[in-house]
Image (cartoon, rainbow, N blue to C red; front, side, top):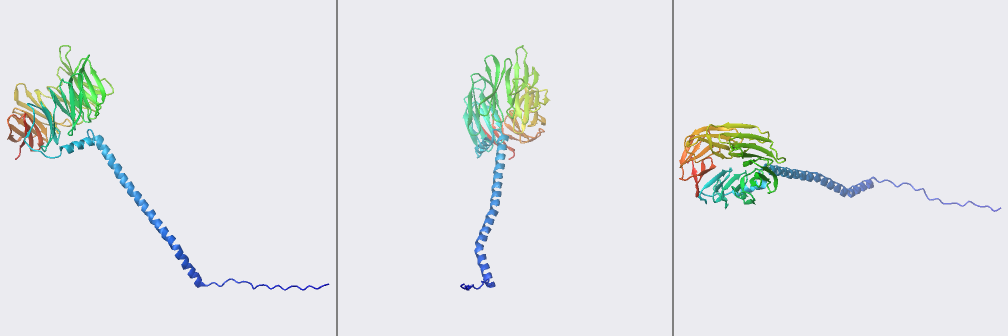
Length: 422
């Protein structure tokens, strides 16, 4: 049998782990740190960007909040101010500037002057003129009415042709609107928010009261079959009216005042004046005033509370101003025996005194009383004490208060200025 020899296989030497060189390890660590540093920079940049974003967001929120607050303030002013913020500031801008006195006006008779704080209206038988207290002539327009009557709100003037067919409404910038009617206008009034009331006749009715909103849209109508409406006044919020009526069907005069809301034809409140005709209805801060020959009544719009003032004399003259109301009572046939009563805009009696001079015009303004008597101008305290007096031109018919110590004296052809304490 053959013999086999085991073949010898050569095995390679066993591999051993390489020797660890500490220097190489340190070198590799340094290299890896350098490679990772850009990422760290990027992370740092990302962190910075993330840090600015909240700041930008905070700034955006702040400015957004400011815009919202301003918008809310403007909205509040828009609704709180008469008519709206645009018209109020438009009037202010129109009144800016100065003018000079004397100034010429047209017409043969001065019918009315309405003091409105920083400006005043003058109505003659020919034109309506607005002047600032600085003497600037803001506008003038020939009205063309045969019997013009002026009624004002805080920002607008309404002029109508008594028992004619036309009316016009103005602010200090332009004529806002004109309106014509099929029946004669008996009386009219304009409210603080721009709404206005017009009383006309109509077939089958003694009077018809029509209310228009600030845009001229009819919003209410009230028909009076037998009673003639001789006065109307609108609440400051434009949501109710008061009317005074006269009835002479039975041969005797009967007068009353009714308060009406626009959701009903029935009066929510009424006041009976019997045979005493109501001469005028006037607005004041939170209510309205009823004037008869011997009484003055202040009525609150909110709850219709009524407070009365009575006099033994007859009402001769009344003037409304920014300070309140001035009433002049005297005895028939004696124009030098005058009793003056002053009321604030809230209906509070501010003063009462006698004035023994003929009164051409008198107004309560700036906490003082100003009076024209023939060719003399008086400045009086609310107690009636004369502070000073000054001569003025012959023919003075009306006055407008320009400042505490100066007046505009209005005649049929000219407006001049009188300084009281010079």
